[in-house]
Image (tube, rainbow, N blue to C red):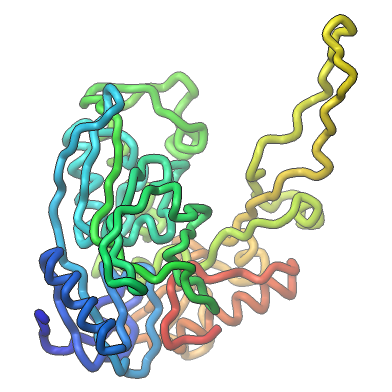
Length: 378
């Protein structure tokens, strides 16, 4: 087992909080990762796998177990059964943004809008990462998993991962356990070969975010540079000198509510229907009428609401903090909880609890945390 001196979680997470584990193991190859996990599981040892630490809030108490650092890297180019496409098999510890940069440099499209997202590639399918209308579910072919229950390696197609809005069967949501306890060893994506010239931008949400017309054509490199600049303005690109980036990104999920409930919110609250509106009335000519009229949908589709808007309009503006606390909302983005320097995990949690309470009191919505919480209660 490739053991190193124990490293505090405060040095391994982008929120820069967390106690020290009893042991730290650094797995740099796939075999080291598999052997380490099998050993821990056979010994019934408490364990935690950490990649980039960008989606983790770890408590202040020390961890009586082993932290496994996934440091496996590498990208293998594979053929695709679909014309004009290529598949990439990426090791779990490969930095996500490095992968995006590599695909853009190679003229491969499908993940360019997810530039600047911190963390590792193996973590991306766990919460179906996405940005500006792109999600990994759109390009994910399969993952290679090491299953805790069996200790065996299995190749699992994307269709079996339960990928949804920032979720999968592998994610440990706050207050629950994952449906399947397993560790991703590699990820296979399928991307379009578009080259380095200007190409039409797919997706209305991405075009809107980039300020592009419906018929606009730009290069992958332009999209990447623009997305990175946009994320940097929001404090969402890691920068040691900027405390606004000492965060876990968006701390709360954008809530999904019924259309009926959304109608009770102030009309200016941003919202996005999760499915198309019901179709208009259908006219069936008599010569084609077969005596059956399909029933109309009885309810409207659910609606996603902006958590950042709810937070700000519950009285907590950008930069809000509790008295004497070293944790605050980002000064650039109300959805990011940040460490202003030497904050404790409990200070971050106290701010999160207050946000939940105020939003629930004002709007009747209980915001759910997006990061994985270990040793912390909200």
